[in-house]
Length: 124
Image (cartoon, rainbow, N blue to C red):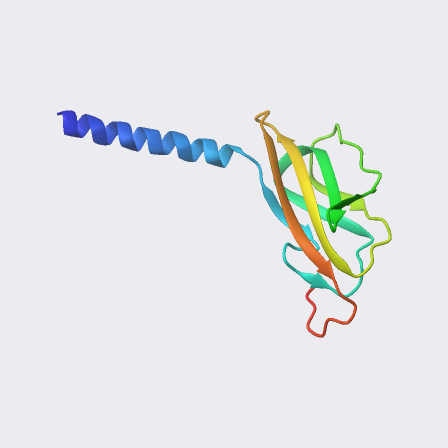
């Protein structure tokens, strides 16, 4: 009886943890994509999320220097966002973002990409 109860509690706990993990919204895709090298500097960075969110942070940095993008937190909930970028040059860039999902939780993450006009097999 105790063994059966322990198994039932373990299954219940696993289901609870799984549902909580699925409740948070994540980044579905970005342009440029994480880890890619593009030949041309993007005029904007596009973010697509798995559900409607409020984008509250967008920070673009290179060589540990935050670049000015003019980003302001967005009050409307959407799945797609496009943030204009300053005149980017060749180099490596990191995007740090934060969103608030419908469940009220803040989700943060980052991704990186590079700009290399001389790249032979650059991926866009």
